Amino acid sequence: MRPYIIINGVSSNTINGLLIQSLPPISKPPIRTNAEEIDGRDGDVVEILGFGAYDKTFSIGLYGDYNVNDVIAYLNTSGIITFSNERDKYYKFATYQQIDLEKLIRFKQAQVTIHVQPFKYSADEKEILNTYPSGTTRAVIAVRNNGNIYSKPTLTVTGSGAVDILINNKPIFTLNLSAHGESIILDAESMNATAPNGNYLNRKVSGDYDNLRLDTGVNTIAVNGDITDVDIANYSRWI
Image 1: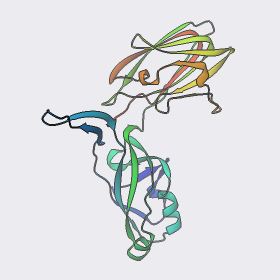
Image 2: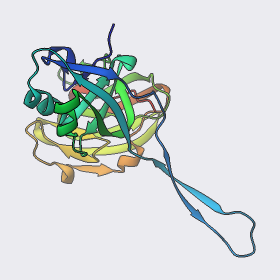
Image 3: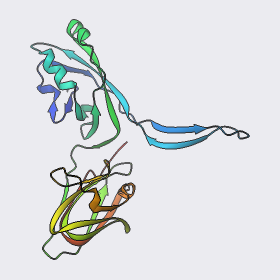
Image 4: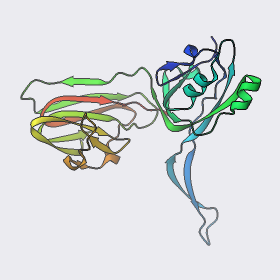
């Protein structure tokens, strides 16, 4: 099978005349560091700052009944991308570098460089949905991070009044929901709390987003309070 990519759910195989000639190698993201030299000490002190975003490059070609504007529009975007040599994963990406349009038209081939964020996610993982009967005051959910590094999940909690969230028996957040019941989406990666309509609800949340993380393997999420729904997404992550 020839190589292909999927951008925001659309396969390159559906773009007339677009051929993916080669894919980028599977690699780990770079580690960001800060090195400090101290007088009187051999070597240096290296501080690990986390994983960095990086570039991936792949080759494309044109053939048959192609429309170069359709090809450029397909590639010159942002969102999520899957490569056929990692069909079960996706990356968050954006295209910042211009594609050499002259070379593409003249030679029917070009290089495309995209900027990817350091982590990759499961393309097949399903959101965990939990609905509880009226009067439920505690829910305990086992969640497995199938990745090879801690994940930063998204939690959606629907309920009323004060609701406490614990991960692996450690208190993480307290939510102050309205009396009639409302939903708050806690996005650990963006470090924001929002309503389903996108309005910010950060003032209704107290806690540290750095602690909203799931270790590799099985984790326990406990939710205490008057709740009706607890949904969990983005709970596995890889480097």
